[in-house]
Amino acid sequence: MFVVVWKVFVLLIISQVHSEPMKIKSYSEQNSCDIGKLADEIASYDKVVKDIIDYVVRGPFKWKTYDELAKFVDLFGARPSGSKVLEESIDYMIKLTREEGIEHIVTEDVEVPHWVRGTEKLTMVQPRIKDIALLGLGRSISTPPNGISAEVVVVHSFDELAKIPNKEVEGKIVLYDPKFTSYGETVIYRSQGAAKAAEKGAVASLVRSIAPFSINTPHTGSQNYDEKVKKIPTAAISLEDADLIRRIYNRKEKIVLNITMSSTYDTKVSRNTLIDLKGTNYPEQLVIVSGHIDSWDVGQGAMDDGGGLFVSWAAPVILKRLNLRPKRTLRSIFWTAEELGLVGAYAYEEKHRNENNKINFIMESDEGTFAPRGLEVAGTPKARCIVAEILKLFESVNATTLVESNSPGSDITVLIQKGIPGASLHNANERYFWFHHTEGDTMNVEDRDELDLCTAFWTAVAYIIADISADIPRY
Ligand SMILES: *[C@@H]1O[C@H](CO)[C@@H](O)[C@H](O)[C@H]1NC(C)=O
Ligand SMILES: *[C@@H]1O[C@H](CO)[C@@H](O)[C@H](O)[C@H]1NC(C)=O
Ligand SMILES: [Zn+2]
Image (cartoon, rainbow, N blue to C red; front, top):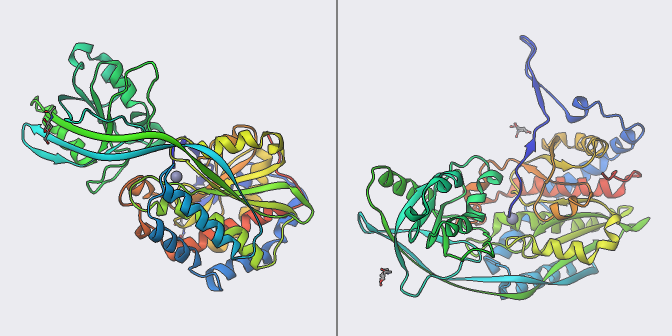
């Protein structure tokens, strides 16, 4: 996941009336949803939902999502934007899908950033010698070959930095040590830190990894220079090392770091992949499920976003196997170059601008594929009421919760901003940011049974939305 504004309004109201047990009101009750006869129509999909869940959780598809994901990430590993391995992994997914007898597969070229990490080394040289784990941030420039050796200034926030006289920052390394509140709020220290430090005359910047938990693992991620300001090298360090430096700094001891980083940066051509299961009645109308196929260059990209990629791959595959053809076309998209700034999604929106009014609903899973809980939904109150009615069919997998969000997903926010209703997978992802953008993003994060529940849920929801008589209303 790139920069998701994590502004989620949980609409579940927990009402405690005296000694009665806690009752959770559903979205529909909370918002007096009345969608008329459509509610009965939606209820009639209960048999299809059960069939899909049985097929995935107990039937021939049991553990297939996990097994296919494992094969994929074990073969390719990390799939950074612009790399040859990313393109090979796209070819592999096309072949895997063709083997299922799905014919409508197209790829669309996209020019993407190609930033390649070289050697990186960070050593504390004062008050004592200690190696510090670091990960350069996306697009970071190199240091001179001999590195940069400078004193550190530690700040909690941009406000604190702004108050320090420039002459006390000039020639130094700024370490941002913000308190992690939410990803959406805290990530600005990663994405804008270098530009703001350079403005004050710093020669490099470091950021405490944007994460709530760490086992000495730095978390990389995208950052953007300000074109009007000098570019300086920038990297993330672990929570443990940020705390260490902070403690020494608070004791008013002088800290000197020596950083050496190298990288290259150009552009390459990659591809978005579009897989269509053509609708029986309205083939030009689209319901989209998606995940991004690129990853950071560390770990295996199994969680971010291998899981989302494979549940979205599975949806048309399962419907084809079960001979369930919805009335509208179900399109599965594997976005490219999400991590460097939703590059594939912007290209898709631009290329398809004339027909984006045919997208009825758009979904993306890019915040983990832990146990499903429901959906985070952007749309009008009526749109949310329809989705809430559909979610009622998922009690058996405990995925009935509708969370209101104005920007669910990552790539799909590009289309949601244009007024298209959409949703991301709401799941038990409390540990997502432990692993996000680290060497720890491997198959070990994924669970066979939880992936099955996500696959079944994702497939069945997409099928119903693509098949019901009513369109999901737009803004
Ligand atoms: C940084 O450390 C390396 C050895 O690891 C040394 O060769 C280099 O001169 C140092 N850089 C500076 C600017 O002091
Ligand atoms: C079901 O989901 C709710 C949140 O939506 C969660 O609090 C609860 O623990 C889940 N139950 C099970 C059995 O997983
Ligand atoms: Zn992602």
